[in-house]
Image 1 (cartoon, rainbow, N blue to C red):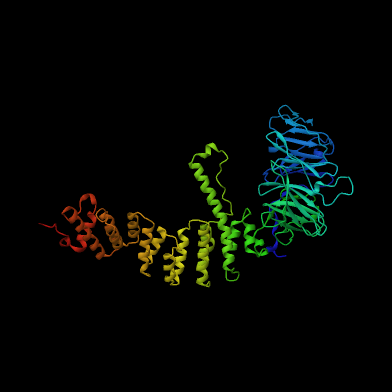
Image 2: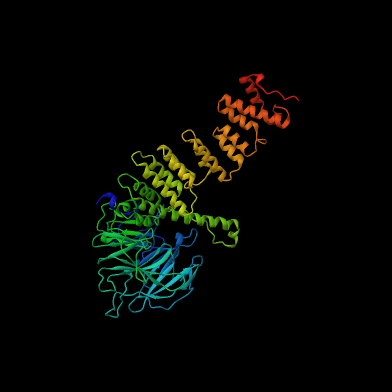
Length: 613
C-alpha cells in the first residue's frame, strides 16, 4: 500500500511509558488522559504521564495491596487509589499540605482531609461509563443491562437525565446480562453527545454484518436513536472518534473505516443509515515495529494504547490521501469542509481540478465553488450579525454573544485568488476560453450567494481578456454589468485606453454610475496622469472655477510634457483673468514654483498680460 493511501495515522510524538509486566501495572485515566505506571504496588515508584505533560509526575506510596484503579483529580491536586471493591484512598498533592491518606466512600474536602456526601441514588448497577468531555456518567441497569441511566455533573451538582433502552439485536434467550460495556461508547460528535452501541448482528434478518447505532443524548429531553453505521462485516471491533468522524477498527483484518454523520445517508423515516465514507484501510504503520495490534486498547475519543509496548498514541486523520480515494468532488468537498485542518487540502483540490491532466467539467467546478461560497457566506452573515449586535449594545444584555469563529472551512476570495486562480490564469497551455469560463463561474457563484466580488477578481478577468485581445467580450461584460462597477476597476479601464480607446469612456461612465464624488474622479484621472481628461471632466460638470490650480500644474509637470504644461498653465491664467480681472496667481494659490518653471521654459514674454479696458 503506497504512502499516499493511508488516511489514518498515529501521532508522531506518543507518550512512552514503562511496559506492562508482572512487576509494573499500567492504568489509564480517561478524564486527565494520563497513564500511570505503578511498580510493586507503588512501593518502588509511580510514574504519571499525559500527552500534554512537559514533565512526568513521579512519587512513591506504601504498598497496601493490589491497586485496582488509580487517578488524579483535575489539576493533579488529589490522588485517588482504589484497592478494594468498596473503598477509595485519597492523598493530597497540594503543596504544604499533609500527605496522609484518608479513606471514605463521596465529596473530597482536601483541607479537612475528609469527604462529604452530596447525593446518593439507589440503583442496581451492572457497569458504568463516564465521558469526561461532557461530564456525563452512564449506568447500566436491569437484568439484561440494556436500560441506561445517564447522570450529568455540573458545578458540584448531579442531575438525573431520562433513562433509555438500547434495542438488543434479537429477543434474548436468557435472562442474564446481555449488554456489555465493551459494546458501548460515549462521544461528542459535531458538538452533540452520542451513545454509540456496537450491535454485532442487525435486528433485520436479511442484513448481514454488525452495525453501530448512534443514540443522541441531549441535556434536556429524551434520548433518541438517530443514525446507524453499516459495517457489512462481523468480528471484533473497536471505536474511536476523530475530528467528528466515527472510526471503526476491525481486529480480524487490522483495517479501519470512517463514517461522517453529516454526509447524506439513507433516511428510512426514523433513522439515517450510513456506509463507510472510504474503502477500509490499515492505520499508517508507526516507526517502531508495531507488534500485534490486537493487544491495543482503545479509549475515547481518539486514544490508542499498547500496554505491552509502552505507548499511548492519539489517532489522526490524514486528509490529502482522501482526495484520491473520493472521486465525487461534491461529496469530497462536503467531507473536507467539516474537517478541522482542511483549508490547504481544499485549495489543492481546487487547483488540481483545473489542471490539464485532472480537469473537471464546468458543472463540477461550479458545484465546488458553490459549496465553498455557501460556507463563506454563512461566516460573513454571522460576522455581520455579531457586528450589528455589538453596535446596538446587545453585548451587555446578552453575555452569550460571541464573535463567530473563522474556521478553516472559510475559503475567501483572497485565498482562491492567491492559491488557485492567479496561478491558473498564468498557465500558457490552458485554453483561454476555459480560463475565462472558470473565472466567470467563480464570480457567478459569489453573486449567487450575494457576496461582494473583490475588484482583483474582476481585474484578473479583464487582464485575461486583454491578453487575448478579446475586447468585444470585455465591452459586453461591462455593458451588461457582468463585471460589477468599482473604482479600482474604473482605474484599470483608464490604463487600457492606449490598447482600447473606448475603455476611457467606459471608465468614466462607471465612475458616474458609482455616484463617485467628482473630486474623487478627478483624483483618479490625475493619478493616471490623465490631466486633460480630468480638466475636460471638471469643465463638463461646471466645477472648473473652484479647482486647485496647483494640483493640476503639479500633475502636468510630472508628465514631462511641456506642451501639456503650457496648455494647463494658460487655462488657469485665463480663469484668473475671468474671475479676478488679472491673469497672475495670488500668493494663496502657492503656484510660485510653477510660474518660475513656466518662465524658465517659455520665457517671461509668454506670460499673459492683464487685459486693459
